[in-house]
View 1 (cartoon, helix red, strand yellow):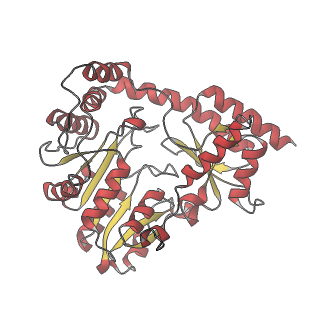
View 2 (view 1 turned 180 degrees about the horizontal axis):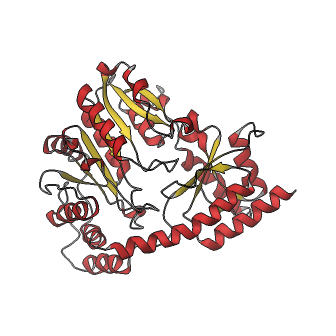
View 3 (view 1 turned 90 degrees about the vertical axis):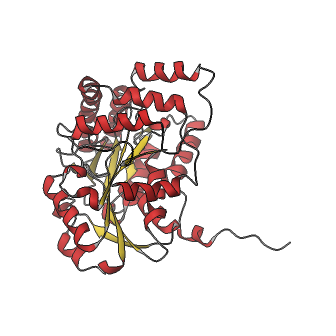
Length: 389
């Protein structure tokens, strides 16, 4: 039999770190280790009860189980537009400037396919969300990483960006509040990004799922004048509305960009489940009280996460936003993965090593706030006990 080989693109990508590591955690739990996982940023609490009720009531109707339009029902796009107006003061045409997504990961793939030919350049942050890199490799783009460092406040160095071969770069991935560092966005940053994109014909894709988490002033890059000319913003209900498994997200931009992304998307999926779209509409109608309650919980958890960092002799910026706490490991620690594995095996607490987000994360760890307070408190006790040995 002639040997069968996978596509060459698989040579350039690895299994997602959390896919591999969570299997290891599951194996340890099967041996009775009782690991506390503070790794993945998936909200552990349910959506609002009205959202669940809407899902269930719609699903119980006999005519709600068929295929749906790829671009979602009009009421969902209307709800996203209303949400953007209330939350950010941004006007969006629901008919032509909004496209629902089956999660932001899908959006990263569809946007990359819509704008990047094989060999085209793409700017990817280091550190940054690993999917930006893996999807860029899958579509055959040439990756140009741009450094984010603590010394530069985890912001892009625009002077360094100007020295890159910008004539071949078509797209730039940006994410603020930044994952994994929790760095908040600023108006100056958004202004500089839009100016950079306009001058060089580079599409600026802003991934914005954390804007409401521990952030009293959420912002969108689309607030900047002229942003729609070169920018696409992705947003999601996963973090802000405790709906990660629902895969309810969206992107917004000018009608031409949206039509190009839709051309890709319409050849890949057959729309989202109608009851989930109805539930998302209900979620998008929730007021400030919902966000305040979400943040009350995360603020309380964040205090314990900071104590864990202190117990590990790690340093951190208290102004961080989002679902995580990012901290620098002690100088006498040689390898961050050895450090997190030691904590995993001997304190039975799973923390994320920063190297998975890029080389600039080599001296950092990340703690997720997506665990109940009692679990975080137990993790603190275990880490303190390990540190005392």
